[in-house]
Length: 113
View 1 (tube, rainbow, N blue to C red):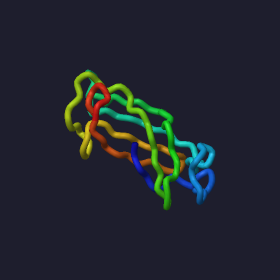
View 2: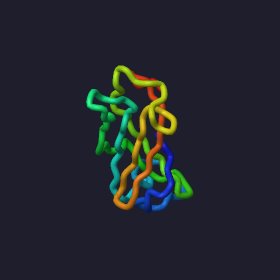
View 3: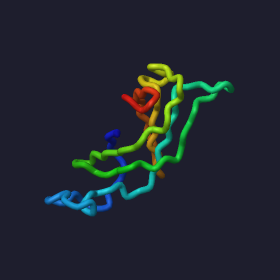
View 4: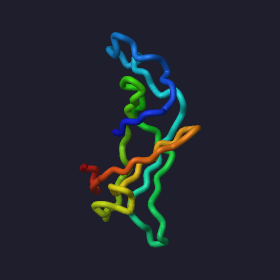
């Protein structure tokens, strides 16, 4: 899960009595996808990229802050503790129509963090 600002207007404002039923959750209105890049280099020298993944949930949690929940793709069997990214061995890129942003996270093969 990551928290983000600047994902556009939600489908509706957060109701005062939020959120006893799922329909009350203010979701992201504009479409976007997630791209993942592991700090693993293949035999041809390229990074492993998994793209076009839809998040499990993306909605506003208050004051312009969004929560984006996702499942990371299976990690390579051999993965460095810290890769070539600023920190971490997996970069998660959120891509929408007007912009994108990337965050680096640490994962271990097998899904443990």
